Image (cartoon, rainbow, N blue to C red; front, side, top):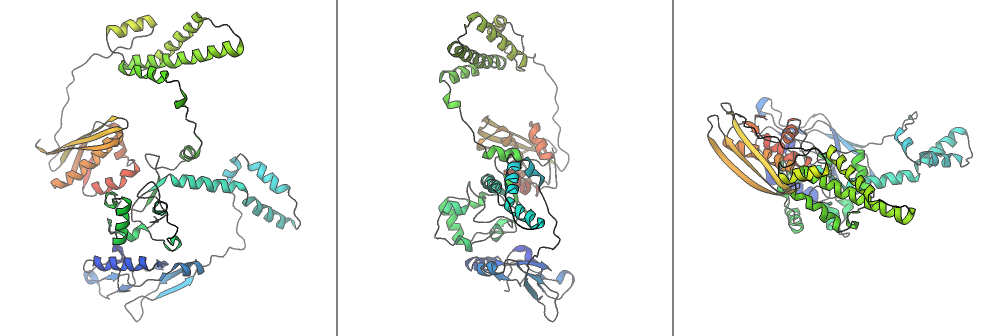
Length: 484
């Protein structure tokens, strides 16, 4: 093959002939071929020159179909040193990893924390076996390994896999058809056609990513169009490896707590509440923050006391005193007032209610006039004042930002709607979009000002939401320095 498959397979010389690269990728995909694992030199051809005139390419490779991979699962090849030709010879062989005779016994201590661990071990150990002691121990361990505990773990892994996604980088680790990367399900499950030979389809995302941009074959582009997927809206994290993330987690981190929350059974009881109770709670939305806290505590506390008093009358045969229950209710309101940190409106109605309840007054602070200074950016620096907000959390959101130069002149402004987002997401989106547009002014140094401490700290520590990683990496790649 006198063609390369992707951009990283050529060094030096003229630019790539992208048409030839795409044709070669189409040929490999249509033929259902896979490249075997390789070792040795990264390039297989050299023009024999030195310095700036030296050209290196990967023109030789070993491709095999699925039948060959099934017959020789450990097949690989090594790129040898050049001899009489400008092409490097390839040496292929089947790698069979034999188990050493003195392989150590390894044990995961986490299994001792499983609820059924001792019971399963005891049941396997109590079953009789005939043979020498070493044979008995080995047989019992093999029998223990096939226990139903492992099947439960495999089932949990499948459930967790359904809640995972990918931050797309070079695409080398992502299965184009079986991994979840462009929708809520994999393309294989979305198409759901058993007549397609899925066992012969093992393409990776790297086959449609060239130098950090999408290169989609026409047949695949037609498939995305039919499924309603706009592939070009999916950001690629250039020059980075693929990263698997947990979608329900904002930062994409995998944890035992997150896995447990994903697979545990949940009981939703809100729909079984009395219809009047939510309406009572919503009545507090028009009150001051402090009064709303007291109102919420009174509604929940009163409901609990009424329910408990009813049960005492019906099932315990106890006499209930109205005055005693009222006293308990007032005590609960007092406890709510002690726990609340909200402030009241300094109005006559709030003061009258608080006096009747006998709780402390949480008055608003007096307004104070404070001086503040707006600082100009440095020479050669562009200042970006950004803000993002959502009407609700989450709710319909939007962003806005304004650009200033070192003389205090406005270079430009922009505002944009975002759809359904949280306040934190809106602030993060504002920072990313601001940096993206700052590069268009030709200034590689940016100073970002935001009123969200949480968002600023997230960008400073590089701990932003996982689905914004690619957009942020692409935005800041055009800037030489960014400060917050």
